[in-house]
Length: 170
Image (cartoon, rainbow, N blue to C red):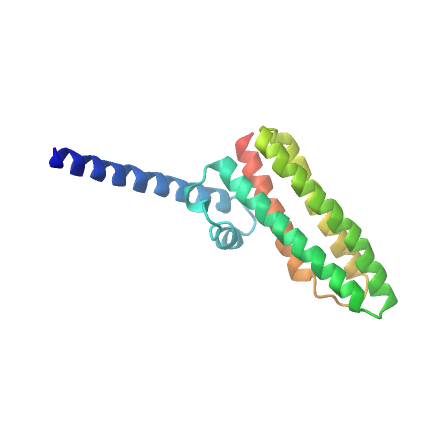
């Protein structure tokens, strides 16, 4: 009886290890298809559950990370806007505030559509998020230097990861 229990435990451990390895390979496969594989691995791979997630789970992780990043960037936009005395930068940041409102809404709707299995809509909405952030970046590049460049690029890259995953799901 004890031998049977030990064998069952060993089989369980082996199967679990194989599942983790397969999921890890899935993350590597996804990230290898992005323009910035190292960024993908370091951001998505660092999130809880990424090592064992399937494609839908990886997209859920990427979308939630994108939403958190968009909210943080929007808070930074608001802080910068309140603290600037430069009229052009203030106007550009107001424009970005609208862009980030659109990006956040698109990501929220992406998450809802992912839960419903409407992958086409998820991809379209992730694209809308990226376009909003690119528009913010375009406006800011036309004015004084700004501290949002890296944060904007991070969110654009995250939206790109979501797009790659959706491409693999459909």
